Image 1 (cartoon, rainbow, N blue to C red):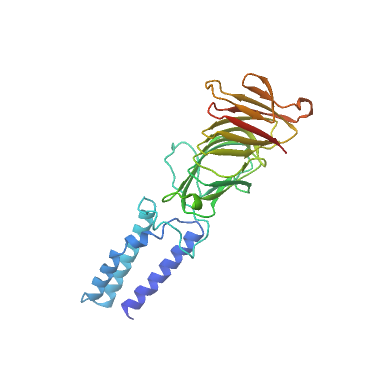
Image 2: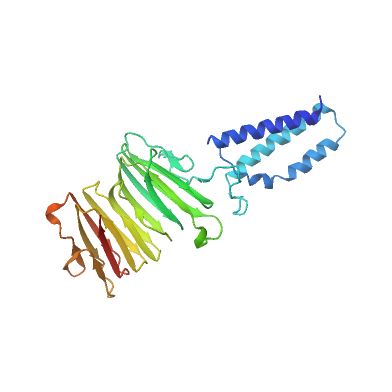
Length: 316
């Protein structure tokens, strides 16, 4: 039996098993780490040149192979992959995600499974704190409690959750594009949320494009902090009393609201700049209200930051 035949057989079997476990989500590692393990090639060449019997060469080769696998898993959990090599290879799935768990109190229960958190029937309320550096967001319903899918560019996606009590879960999620952000290549992210719980959302959006549609979810509270030049979002009628707070550097904000929901709007009073509101009637200084009070199934109360100069309420 030739030692090199045994070695290559074990090598291909090990790579195949690792690849399968990675695809199934059992383990997580980055292919880019292979480039940092290139010195192992010199080690294997040295073993081949040594005047040893085939038995000892097999033992040494297998030992080095398992050490390489251990280093692969260790380095993949650290910050050794830069943006150049962290991009997905052509044979990997289109949506590539990475989850890095943060340190959380040992007494709490933490669910973390790459880019998603599974839904459980006892969850009635969910608190989401989401931070997105740049990109276009699409909110859709899904079977999981939350899942974040990436459509175009390579990003870090971090999700953690803590069970506050028997029926409430708090979720912290962050999306950070890797490398330089370009307007024509900004990320497109599908945020899949389960539509069963009542949601409280706290969103930090550095730069987003297009309308953000929340109409499919029971939203009780929505806090949006945005640095985008314009902000456009849509609300639904699945919860009877909705509180919305908007902190934005955008001069113009557009909000779409169902016709059967009453709407009130208040502007912060710490700014003397001009302020215009379309779609609502002015009730008093910095106070606006819709004219459908007798035909509503609920109310949406909106507070707008002082630096916003124009708000348009659209009905659908």
